[in-house]
Image (cartoon, rainbow, N blue to C red; front, side):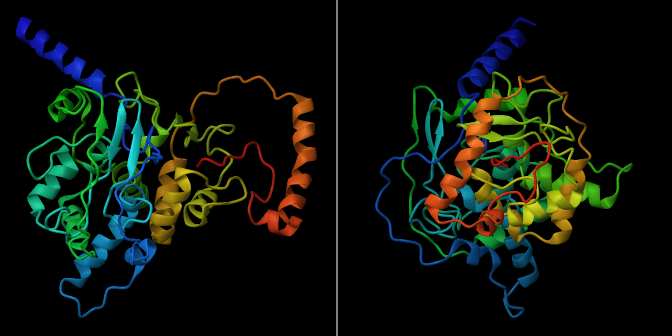
Length: 366
């Protein structure tokens, strides 16, 4: 018993150290630092994710599947730095303890993953272990990716190995000691890493289960939209209740009528995922990248499945908030036309850039 308590204490200590380390997309943002010079990308990121793969291409069906899944996983948003080649990494992710740079996941055999085996890739996706056996930081969302099937993982790797090779090594992570010792991540994994198998719910429809697979797996929506505890893990029984991340709000995705999606229809959610706007909200910040590089490229069927799953989430309990100051609201309403004139916007142009009607709430961070 004494040895167990000692090991548990070490694990908790390690968990505390790495707890808030830019957990997936939470608490992450591009860092205004000078990155090594590199040529401007010759390939448009969205083109790489959407360009048709010819039937004559060897293994075309698997490559198409992998291309689609890379979009579904929003890989581009984190693995694309300013003026860098798509998926070559080097994006600085700011965390409370320093900066973590995303890795090169192009087909380059020296600095990318072109030399990785399918087993190595599967281990990275499911256990957060790289090709050299080192722990990856949870800034790479393997706690969610571990729900992805082996067949889908193999398809993702097959596609990534066809991407243009970019010989580029991201800067070294800038972390305070001892956070640079990757083995401390083992403690966090011991405490918080859940089962890697996705379990279908026989009581739900195939569409609901497909949505659950996408939202909780490749989509890793809870990485941003579920609040975290002091150790950086999801708070128990608060899935999708919303969180604040680096001055951006990742809103509540439950059926709460005021703070969540209670006032949205399933079609409203699907439309937002397709275009980044609907009658209730417009996407901004990191969510705009998610729309651009991920959900806008997905099928109508999958967007609808995700919407069905999200609309099934129990409403977050409401918390009473003080009403806004009426005077401030009047002044804000009076300034809106002034801003519009200053920017040369007509009422019709504005209507295409904001929700079309007022509702119980509107949101711009999701």
